[in-house]
Image 1 (cartoon, rainbow, N blue to C red):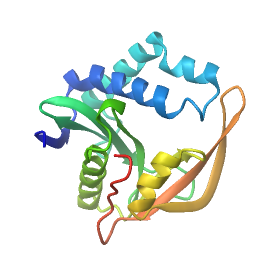
Image 2 (tube, helix red, strand yellow; image 1 turned 90 degrees about the horizontal axis):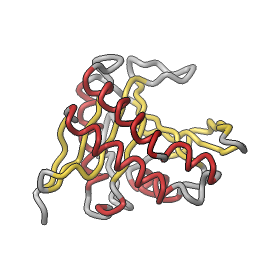
Image 3 (cartoon, rainbow, N blue to C red; image 1 turned 30 degrees about the vertical axis):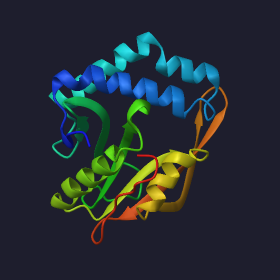
Image 4 (cartoon, one colour; image 1 turned 45 degrees about the vertical axis):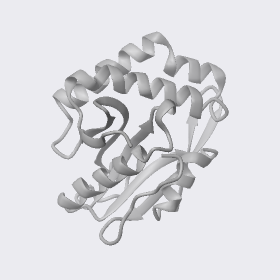
Length: 188
């Protein structure tokens, strides 16, 4: 087993995070998103913009409760997770947080990195007094939904359509993090 763990992201990790994001989206979303939209958010220009955004997320997060974590294996960044206070109407950001993204490099899946990222996220949020964690997932994203489902997440009945040249449906998932272990092992 490789030397693996999770730590807070550093500025120097931004390029690796952007690269993982692009690779994971290209592989995981190729059948979920319109081709033109996927190309737009994974192009070289987009990769550069993501790198800047992730650098900013580390250097000057919007709040102390916004965090970017990276999974590492043998000193190589292999995945990441970002979270912050929930911003959807009706959510109390004092006790509800949002998992903004959790992605593992397609070359490093099924090695527990996603589970470690989710566990570290939950641990930090519990320390902050968070009770409920929510996230948005593409309705057809069986990998993410299955992974989170094994960790006790379920749809909460909220949905939205993103305009990506054609409507793409997302559903909101939620979980109570006040008790029990909220990590999964499928697809991670």
